[in-house]
Length: 247
Image (cartoon, rainbow, N blue to C red; front, side):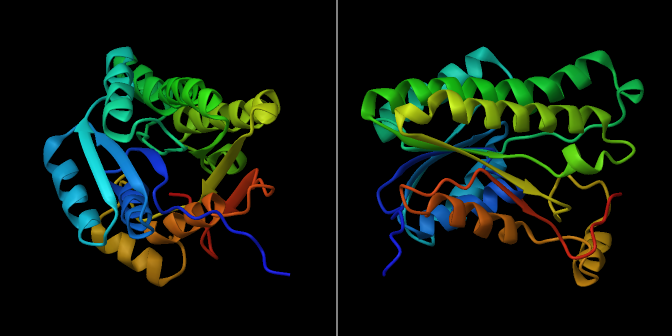
């Protein structure tokens, strides 16, 4: 029996944080599948670079500058979703900031991490659900982190936000299942992304020693989750390097 897959060609996808790291790699993969993708970031230059590279691979990509930590930023994003895409079939939320231990951060800084990593996810989910309910279904995918499991020293604020995302997603899934909306979480381990504080050379060494993954590995996992059959809901997918690097 042939297994049915979901074709991403023509799907309207909102990708948060598509200008760096996992988000940028995901933007390229989604565009390569023929999806219509809107993404955003806080800075114009990396946004333009990400869009240019994604367009080389096909698909249709749009981008704006916006800040998902603010109410105004979310409103701007979904105004663009309605104008450029005409709705949203899938949300891939991965805009996130790294953090220090809470006692080493200024109040404004740790609050910004929470507003970006957790509140921004919830706000994007709510606005997406409103549109998905009207059209009869959709798929929400949140990029979480294994930090919720390993609780590594130095990650108290970051782990708190990702644990919030995990609990939110698993509970939300039960609340909107009858609306034909899937909810999935991909939990990456260490990835050689911009969020890592180590040098580029240290990242390359960690990848070579199988202690970190390329961002493209996580993009592949996201693609896998999004392309399952309508009946198949990947609730949680944990992916990490063979030897997890925790610092």
